[in-house]
Amino acid sequence: MRRPSDLALPGLVTLLLLIGTALVLHRHWVYEVPLIYGETQTVWSLEARIEFTADGGPVKVSMARPAEQSDFTILRQSGASPGYGLNFIEGADPRAEWTVRAASGAQELYYQVDVLESDNWSGNNFPAPKIVSPDWQDPYRTAVLTVLEGAYNTSSDNFSFARELIKRFNQTDAPQHIRLLRRAFNGRMPNLMADILNEAQVPATVVYGLELEDGRRRQLLTPLLRVWQGGKSQIFRVSDSPDEELPLLLWEQRGAPVLDVIGGRDSRIRFSMIRREESTYSALTEHTDTGQSLLNFSIHSLPVEEQAMFKTILLLPVGALVVCILRILVGLRTSGTFMPVLFAVAFMQTSLGTGIVGFVLVVACGLFIRSYLSRLNLLLVARISAVIVTVIAIISLFSVLSYKLGMTEGLKIMFFPMVILAWTIERMSILWEEEGGKEVLIQGGGSLLTAALAYWAMQNPVVQHLTFNFMGVQFIIVGLIVMLGAYAGYRLSELRRFASFRQR
Image (tube, rainbow, N blue to C red; front, side, top):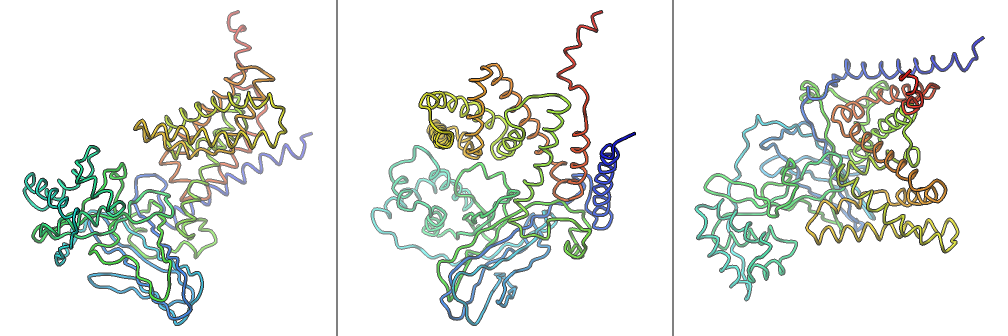
């Protein structure tokens, strides 16, 4: 006679798989979210969060908002402002304006816009602003004239003139007069470039753009240089950075202030963003209200900052499934059960190669220092605390060394979970004392292999698309994990014990 638990397990697995499949198909058929990654158009959800302290009287907040431009089409926009009146002012300089008769204390305002990546819009060329020549004081005036003379002689028009200026200021071995200007205008290089171009009677101003990177939170606008040549204009990034490959949305295109607060102080604005894939029909229509149906299990109704957090969190079950497969079916031994999943998340922030090298270096140095601490006979809490401080010191040292050596990739090692690293070092140190170095290498290698495989699974665009857009996938993953939990057969690593039977 079968036990009730033997009958309940297949029923539970079947129920979970059916619920997950039903939710996925419902969202696909009703809300037209594509199942296959790539059959979509990219939509960016951007959220601006304005924070300031109101003085107690009337408040008026005016914020620049993006207009349609080359490569981007504005789909929909909204604001969250309890107690405030909100108006979208159209025209050449589109803005969002919040007003209230009286407000005091800390205030938070939200503006959200969805933009579609599209190259079907030709774009507008704004008229050039009025040239205002700055009043330079010596020795800066002499330095500016020297820079202008050199850049002007090696350029042919306004655009090449701007490129020459940017190139000269980005040189590592720049002349003394450029180093003088860089020190004096540190942090305001786009404004310096615009003033230098205006000195040469070239129309230029500082505009602000938002570099789009999936899942980023609390980002700042990037100041850019806009230069005019006749009726046309071009946008230039002032600093050479690896972020030049990121899509760039112009948030403010005319050189006007991005944020103007009347009746408040200490204002600041931060941006969060998330990328999602929508079908063409869903992207171009307004009917996709994700909060109208209880069966529409989606996190798209949450604020963008929370969506960005959940996009990573929803990948953790995928890493857990990889761990279950490798430990239950393959028999791979790891240091800690789900520690490799946390390191896989860290690898997503760094890169696989940088993450593995950083993990090995930090753990190796940590084991050496931990062996010394073991001789002091410290209590567990004090020993772990000392290891945590040591890990932070090691990561700081490696970051500084890599920066000094010009290896900026090494700076990403700071994304490692430091407390988890400390516990990993403690666990491996105890394992070394009890089982020997061979077992440490086996479990450490197994942890790295598991983390690498989990990283590849979690980094896959198809997996990210499914987990983020279909909450039913979580039910399917739970069903598979429960099914794996009932496996009681041989692991693949155990089959080698029976290799001798094949030789007979």
